[in-house]
Amino acid sequence: MNIAYRDFPKLIKDKGLNGWGSGESGGSGGSEGGSGGERDDRLGIGHCVADVLNVRSGPGTDYPVVYQISTGNMVDVLKISENGWLQINCLHGVGWCAAQYIQWSPFESQQPPIGIGRCTADVLNVRTGSGLDYPVAFQLSQGNMVDVLTASGQWLQINCLLGSGWCASQYIDWFRINLQVPAIGVGKCTADVLNIRSGPATDLSVLFTISEGNMVDVLEDNGRGWLRIRCLLGTGWCSAQYIDWSRHDK
Figure 1: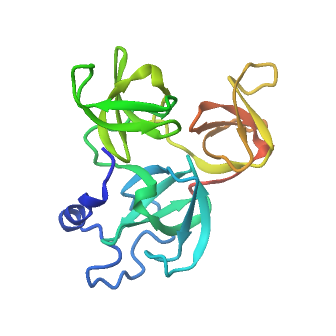
Figure 2 (figure 1 turned 90 degrees about the vertical axis):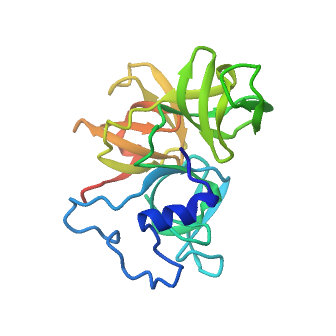
């Protein structure tokens, strides 16, 4: 399930996740640079739910902005501060941002998402169970992003910034993800519009397109000028020359 600000003190106390605050000096930690490669200091993965989100050098608005991310950009979550900030890592580097704008799931979550999607209705009721007889827990608006936890007939169990619940599947445009397929790197699109195809050739069908600045996970490099990528819209192949990317092991 996604982490809410109200859960931070318990997480920090139980799991020792604090990097700043509570009298701790912070220190250099073990997640900076990451020599050796055998240790994974990430707490979880998530994506940005703000149109534009400032990422700062420390956990507070008095720290300078080091870069910005936008809706759908994927991040690794490294640390939690007690004042409602997350230390994140993405293509642009490491920094801190307000936790309320990152929808994320911890790796130790009991129910990892099976997919990612967005609301297509103007207003969508999210209920406590999979049926109209269950009470409304909260509402989504068009464009709100969700993690899909379970698909059951015409209903989806979803998780988002507001909490978890069930909603009619026809109003969620979503795709399945397979986090068991590891990414070999991360990158961003450098073309105005880039076709993502069903295979590594220009005569194969276009599945969807991405735009300049869109972030992707790189799953495979076939060595012949094509990359298999994963992003918010799905998985497919694209010309490698239009993806500025780096391998995780470099």
